[in-house]
Length: 426
Ligand SMILES: Cc1ncc(COP(=O)(O)O)c(C=O)c1O
Image 1 (cartoon, helix red, strand yellow):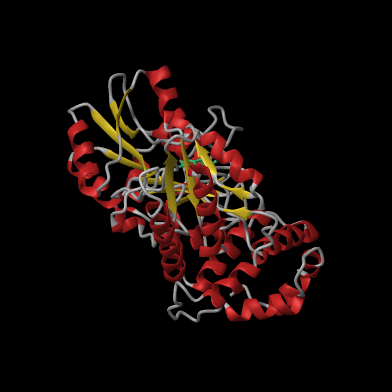
Image 2: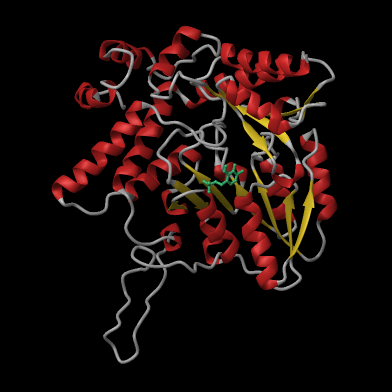
């Protein structure tokens, strides 16, 4: 439980720079403890208390959680305290504990979690480790982030693999059909985002993994936007790997992430990046024939060396923060705000093209759109001038805009964006 008066008082230095009082924040922290009960997704009093726990500025409206998830005070404090504790006592290690906490959070076992620094690390570990030969085929979407595009394009350049793509459809069923239609005897990998960064559509990951397993294909998921947005159970999903970060929807420190590698898949996924912790402690260079020993018998084989304890304490605190509110409550709140955003965009008529599906199971907290007759970069500039931060989506020639909202946002902020669109379309 992150609420602890001693820890909180240590936050006074941070709070001193802010516009609200210590008492207000203490009150807000008490208010947000849901005690495992359901919180109404439109209980603005409750969610406003949550908002107060974020140092995120009020100078502009931040609708871009999909790029960067700002951390609340307890996380920032935990990073500082974690660093202070390590540096004060000259102690080393301690970050492995976080793998256990992360595993419980996403429905995995501790020995299936490798600590990484971001999503890109996890995707590269997987992409390099999967056994592929020239001519082997990998299926991706036309909506990739550079982090899940470039590693595979690099393997195509270096090793001659073949990349096939599909565009996610407006329904999960049709998306599955499109994937199935691309499968051939040479297909080895389906490497897709759980939620593309471009328009936030939730792909039917469980069915994709099932299809892959039935055909003897590896399922490798870019999970940048999964944890903290969706109720995750990776064992139930059935993927071989799931690469993600702890900052976006989990609201943890930037520069932290993790890679899930299914236990049985660890014998298949070759590790290349090795060092302290990825071995089983049996190596010895002082023998006539230096001895290697073996890889660690868990996902630690995929990373090695010193990690930043403070950052991992921040990840622990982020999970505590989420659990204090309740992951289901968070999911419900952001899903309802996403639905509200969709309704508002759709209410603007033909000039606004919503590019995120409205299908219930395929939508959540991120929406993509275009404004007919208005250059997307111009509208982005208009928003910036009016102190609203969204994201342009230039990748893959999509030339669109993206709005993403988390628990610190509310409907009034979405309305500010809608006002700007109304102005733009005249
Ligand atoms: C879908 C997706 N994949 C991969 C990444 C890369 O994440 P990171 O910068 O943590 O490596 C992002 C980042 O926004 C993303 O949205």
